Amino acid sequence: MVKDKKCRLISRAINQDPVYQNIESYEAEWEYLNFHARKMKRDESWTNNTGKNEILIVLLSGNFSVQSGSYEWRTLNGRKDVFSGLPHALYLPPDTSYTLTAESEILDFACGWCASERSYPPSFITPADVMKMGIEYRGGDNASRQINRILPPGSECQRLICVEVYTPSGNWSSFPAHKHDDRKIDPVSGKIFEAKLEEIYFYKIDKPQGFALQKVYTADRRVDEIAEARNNDVVLVPEGYHPVIAGHGYNVYYLNFLAGSDQSLASTDDPDHKWIYGTWKGMDPRIPLVTIEMNG
Image 1: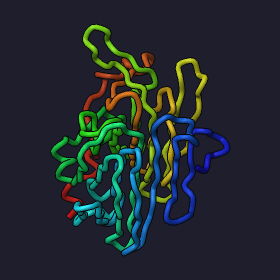
Image 2 (image 1 turned 90 degrees about the vertical axis):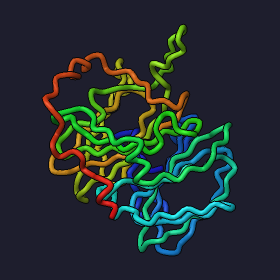
Image 3 (image 1 turned 60 degrees about the vertical axis):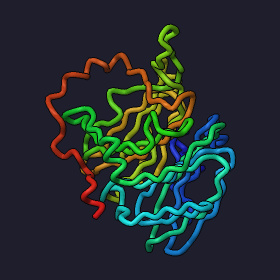
């Protein structure tokens, strides 16, 4: 993992194939979450075993096929890039061997994985499945953004959660700011009010010179940093609130992987900014930024 010297929370993309991002849980001083992003050329293959982990493979661009025992999955209408359609993804449980093969001139994909003591069936997620789970338009005005659920709470897995978020040029995202670093449960109902989660933001920008700004801070400012995220960069969120701003002129995509105490997105808002809820006049007309029709 290559960290920015000015911010201990950001990992710069490395100009190296096939893996250009790699976050191991021990490097991040985390208990669960791991991540990597990889590019491959047509007919190249990657063979692996999930070991004691559950894993989610998310297609960023191109097409792939995966062989695992008697199972075979293949994408036929993979997107040209993350700004050109909805995702395909593949969830695999622990103790699963697989071979992934690039079926396009260039294949770009990301993987998130974490330890799992349970076994669930493999699941191949298509753009149509993402549509069925519901595309969410969250916020309003210049805090409008689009959320595509890939592996949301309630999915058949133990810990992993995955969504992708599109933030139009100049807009705020993950705002009003929230945190999920302290597990809080109602002692009577058992309802989870806040889960304790590790989180990764993996960025794509629609122009090569574009950027986003992400602030990560705790209430006591023990953590208080601002990261400038460029294309293919990763921001780690070990704790605290973590809003994002898309640079003016640049549409911003980020892929969120989370893992921790619960397969839940229960969070706590920064009380200083909760008043903003209910003040919005409407959704940014640029939303949605991507639709299933773009997949072709």
